[in-house]
Amino acid sequence: MSFTGLVVVCAVAFTAPLVLALVPRLRLPAVVLEILVGIAIGPNGLGWVYEYYLKVDPVAAPNGGYDLGELRAIQDWNVRFELNAIPGVADVGSLGGFVRQYQVEANPNRLRQLGLSLRDLMDAFERGNLSVGGKTIDEGGREFVVRGSGRLQTVNDIENLVVRSGASGTIRVRDAARVQLGGDFRRGALDVDGHEAVGGVVVMRSGGDCRTILERIRERVAQVNATLPRDVGDAGHGCMRKVRISFLAR
Image (cartoon, rainbow, N blue to C red; front, side, top):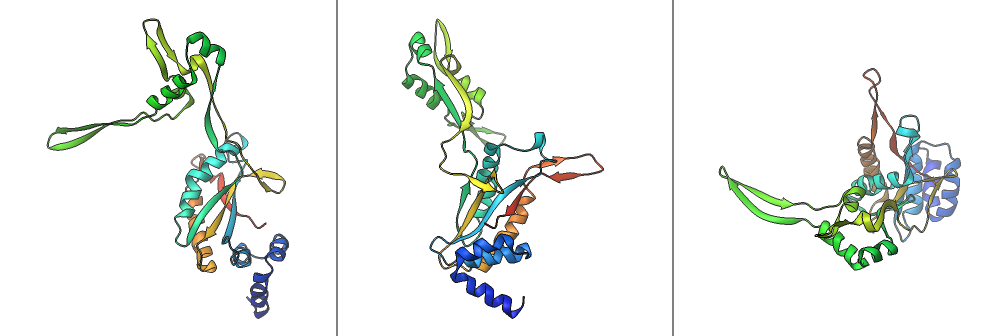
């Protein structure tokens, strides 16, 4: 980098809004753009040093891609934890998509017919979503821990929960309510080139070195990209990555 370039990078640290507006139009290597944006926004009170989104290859991905709920799940349960473990990173916030949740819509008419209340349904969820211990079993000089796992994992698991059983039969959740997989209420969205996307922002710890943390983030991003979902092709073509993390210069 020339001396002039160094002067520009140092000067823009005090004009972050201007830099962020110009970055998308700069024809610079991705590494330089990351450092430039990091320096521009690093000194602020939030320590927001890196922004990214999950880029999907519509050709390699099944059925042409993923919905926003699936991408948000990848972000929350795969990418976020990996980036949050980087030394010097205070937090990783998720942006865009839908937080998936199991939604149970009780039918008041069915509840009345079956003689049930909402409390009965809630009690059924609590009983069916518990993990309990069964102490240990000694066999062959070894000790085995006995544990009963009652974790609910699918819509079908919830539908089959027993609410009440007796001589007249067994009443399950599906008999009194509708269970579905939906999205939680959200307060914003992430837009990339006019399309909704899912991504996140990395916040560094107070007093940290922006350049060092950005280098660690780039290294970890390369590692995380290798673990994201892949499509397995034929033996002649091997594997194709269908989801990857992309740097977002906004």
